[in-house]
Image 1: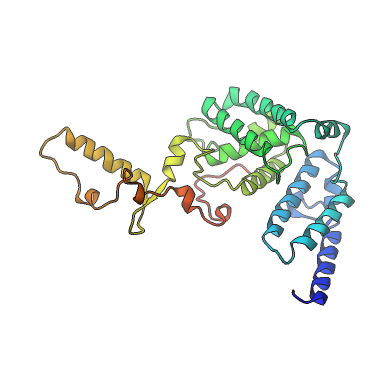
Image 2 (image 1 turned 90 degrees about the vertical axis):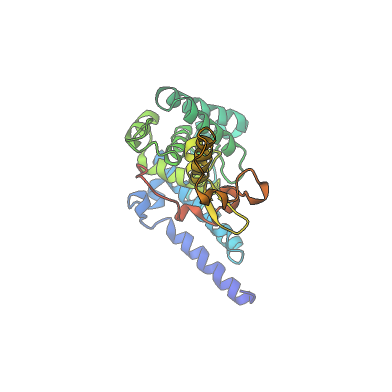
Length: 288
């Protein structure tokens, strides 16, 4: 890739790939071509999500990044994705980003009041604000209903709200009926949001305290990783023993570096995997 001839050949290959891509049948688009899919509002969102995911992947390849992004920009132009899809989108795109975020939050709150409860609605609204501040996710592009449904989908997935045994339970059909969206489009958009914002299972910013604690891990000075739940159990045992003279705590408890000692403590967020999205713990179906 240091040779000009090799870079030129790679540029040609990438350009040809994305030029042909717009007329290839894509399984994620229901075996439609991107050119066909963009004629429908939901299909347009799905194509946009695929391109955003491809651009994110291209960022990791320094040698191919510039040529790849240039080729994808040309694909966007050919598909008409370099400009708003309608007069409504054009008006939204020309306004302040805060107005667009406020509209998405209004829709999220409407669903949250009836189905999510205060805690999960608050997490979804927090994610709205996070997306509004991100440069890599333009909330100005696309339908507000799809953004709203995808944001709720992310929160539901992180907090296992698609699990019927959960106290708060929703279904993908219910979610998409409310917002007037398609499952495949919302699931794809939710995946892009989670990857781009680097949100991981157990992320304390977007998980309930109970869920976050399930995935919180501490590291001892010796490099031993201990789930927070085990330390909590040890704490509870020692508290009980203090009120019952003559009962000793389990010996293992005394060999563990405690959370009260800062040098032994390092939360999960510092130990986050390089790419958690492909390795996340999947306990339940996410209704995608």
